[in-house]
Amino acid sequence: MKKQQREKWPSKLDDIFHGLAGGFLFSAPLLFTMEIWVFGTVVTPPRLMAMLAVMLTIVFFMNLTSGFQKRSSGLSTAVAETIEAVGIALVTTAIVLFVFRGWTVETPLPEIVGKVIFASFPFALGMSVANHLLKGDRNQEGQEQGSEATGIAPVAISATVKNLGATVVGSLFLGLTVAPTEEIRVLAVELSPPWLLAVMAMSLLVSYVIVFESDFAGRRRERQQLGAVQRPSIETIASYLVSLLVAAAELMLFAQLTPGDPWGVWLSSAVVLGFVTSIGGAAGRIAV
Image 1 (cartoon, helix red, strand yellow):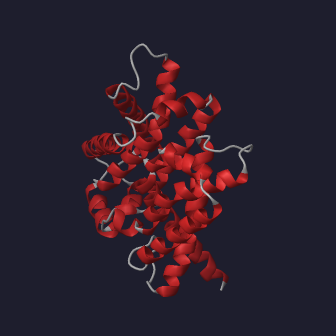
Image 2 (image 1 turned 120 degrees about the vertical axis):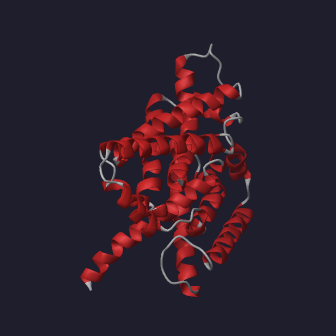
């Protein structure tokens, strides 16, 4: 019995990471929509409960055909997965909003609850479609890459260039949905250096989980392939730096940043948008 429980936990964590990846990929731009934050502060309790009921209902029906866990489908499974998905979405969204100062320890509890429930809706939807969001034959792709990865330097260099290129494309795609908005500058001004460091740490952690822990398209198998340049830690950091550069370029493109702005404004704005572009970059890397 204990052995079965020990074997069950790694699989359970895989499912959770899989769902978290789908949630972040689906909801990242909407987490920066301050209209949702504001609406969450003024909504009445009955409407809030109605919103939660609608979220549970939609996620339930989506879990009947998709979901984020790799197990047999069925009514009881969909109910359990719905409760887990909404619970994880609420907790994760609350953490993200806290890091971005969407709420603090001084914020009234009803306001926190309203913000978190409304902002967690798209995250829960992303979790419920995680298995269909990014498809791929995990075993086959991992085997194909394993057969190509013989430790030869040109192969490693080619894979690195491909991953960084995919990071740029993914970062551009997702970053364009947020870069033109004023939320980036507002958050950048409000976040102090310690909180900017927290955003950077969260960006690195989320992108690492999406690429190397969610097991989309067999990417986890790459941990032992292609030498040092393809190690998860190095790839995650390098891709994050690329995502920051893409974020800065997009902000300059939309006149959110100018050459005359202080370097601190450049850094803080790039770090804030970098949360979104790093998620986009991770999506690009698991798509190639």
